[in-house]
Image 1 (cartoon, one colour):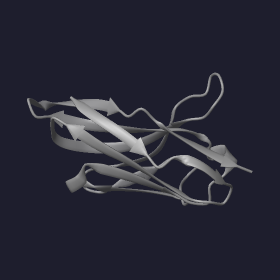
Image 2 (cartoon, one colour):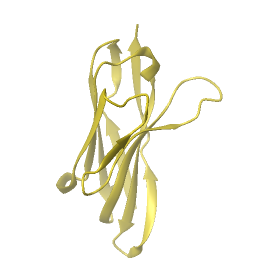
Image 3 (tube, rainbow, N blue to C red):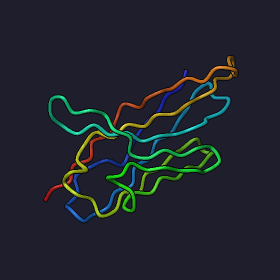
Length: 124
């Protein structure tokens, strides 16, 4: 139905920057919100919201990344970006993209889809 593919993760030193991308494809009528989540390594770690953006461009951020990360999107390309600056070792996690989508054949329904995740590792 819908595929989300993240890219841009990698290994970076503390204080550095990375830019993540997530492209959605498939039977898409409309993409509403697009959201980045992350899950740190280790047992029991919860997936947490990093940043979210609506189709109109309104955004919100998790407290731990506000002022350092910027979310943006290109509606024509069904793509959401996450610019991550001033990275800290605590930002190390698998970053996941989530999209709320209305499908072509069921436009009255809103369904959430997830990407496979991209690893971000910040060394101290």
